[in-house]
Length: 170
Image (tube, rainbow, N blue to C red):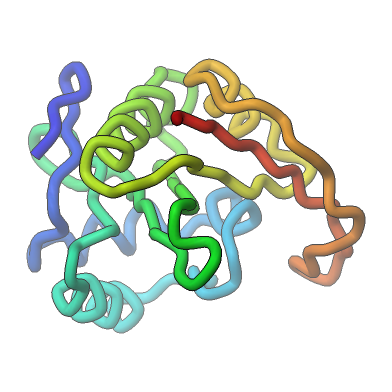
């Protein structure tokens, strides 16, 4: 568990099902995530997700939690082959918790954790155009804009640019 102010990053727990559905079943959350995060987000999706993360070795996806319940998620996925010194970070937060710096603290803590835990040189994030809040999170933590992949994402019937942000530590 990693403390981030009054919140924490912790492994997912079996009792997170209700909160996953409550905060994950929101089109405003879904529109900024890959389609593997479904919408509508159902109890069956939450149960499948918890089964998936229990099988991870090592664990790379974690809950962002308040004292009483999960409020989002954050993960760092180490790449393979020639990209093995890089990892992708991803995160989401329930809408009632937006704008309070929680995502910034979570990304900062997970970035430090990943660099300390794995033999990484680079961590990157992909942000869909139209998500300035996520851009601000990454920039506050120290990620730098590396490029734009034009019309590379097809989400909700629209072609979107993808912004690449990265942090390098040698």
